[in-house]
Image (cartoon, rainbow, N blue to C red; front, side, top):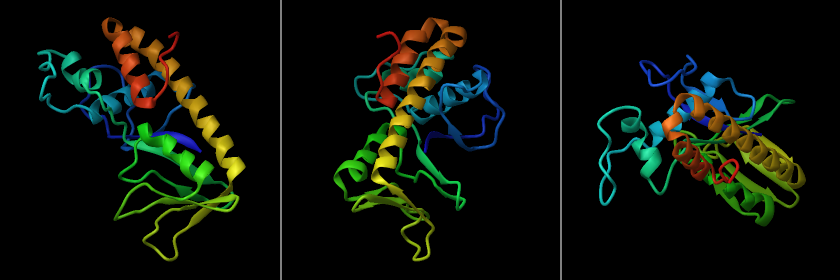
Length: 205
């Protein structure tokens, strides 16, 4: 299990170095190259790049503040992605759904601790997690009667979720160092915003 961020192709992005990859899912952790950290920050900021309304201050006129304004000012931040689970024995991969976000990852505590059904999206793909006794079943697409599934002992799911928190903490530490290099005037607010969207404490706080 790994935390992944849904990233767009960074064509034309020039505010800081980013990895030249096609769109897809980027795993987050404490060993990412600098360019992939830049891709992750670009993607999270892009998710929240929405014109201000209400009492929020207007966008700055120049970059990078122009692009980062939503990330730095929204109360409810969003990071498209979620948790990816791969069964290496069968080759089955459980991917985040369209209604999933890294900020919602602690919803996984429901099947891990309390049981019940947890859905992550809808048509065209409807991934769900559900607990049956001491096993959690991950169904890749609940709309298909022949959908591939992954089954995990509850104890293993809890262990994997602990690893997810460790990976995200490692990523946030990297992002703080990255921001000191590429966004030195905005290091503290950018790191604080990333910590908020990930539900973590900022480094050294």
